[in-house]
Image (cartoon, rainbow, N blue to C red; front, side, top):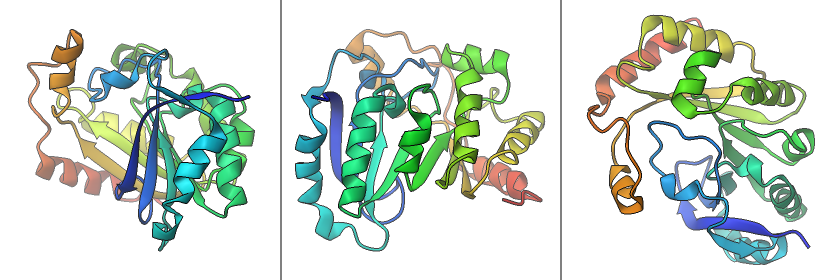
Amino acid sequence: MTIGRIHSFESMGLVDGPGIRNVIFLQGCPLRCLFCHNPDTWNFNEGTETTPEELMEKILRFKPYFKNGGGVTFSGGEPLMQPDFLLETLKLCKEHNIHTAIDTSGYGNEKLDEILSFTDLVILDIKHVNENDFLSLTGVSMKRLNKFIEAINNSNARVLIRHVVVPGITDSKDHLENLKNIIKTIHNVDKVELLPYHTLGVHKYDTLNYLYKLKDLPPMDKILCSQLEEQLLENLNY
């Protein structure tokens, strides 16, 4: 029997894919992004245990709301770190004709092709644009992201790309030009969004007794972030 660990379940999500969605936050993440606002999802041994079938029963109660392209989004944590559970639940969703999305940093190395074959939309959060800075920002290598991009390009999944703009870290002209070059290598991209760095999750670090390393960094200016997004999208044909 396949068992998964769920951090939380959002029944009426509006920003994690098209339409009204169930957003299922899977427990566990190997990344330690300096700007992470959900450190409570890191620990793989926490969360609520459930089976794909049990989760599907809950999802089906909300199916009448999945109009205008709505459906289910698997987020985290890093959903690719529970590949068996994710794959089995995706299969059940497709059996019930439910639109599926995964919100991921691309950090997975098991059953990627199978998972993507049951995924309608990939919301891909690209953390950084080169190996050294990616490692400094997240604590892990960029190599799995590169492999995941290869898997996307071998699939029919549509892609929404998101990137967090952190002042002094991911907001330079050269950085965004390198991001553009990465985006150009990805197939089936429907949209690109730059998200302004915020500090809304900092209180969780105090609760968990974790050190927040960017505590002296102010939030990203939203207007400037929008301007950078416009610049990024110029001449970006996807």
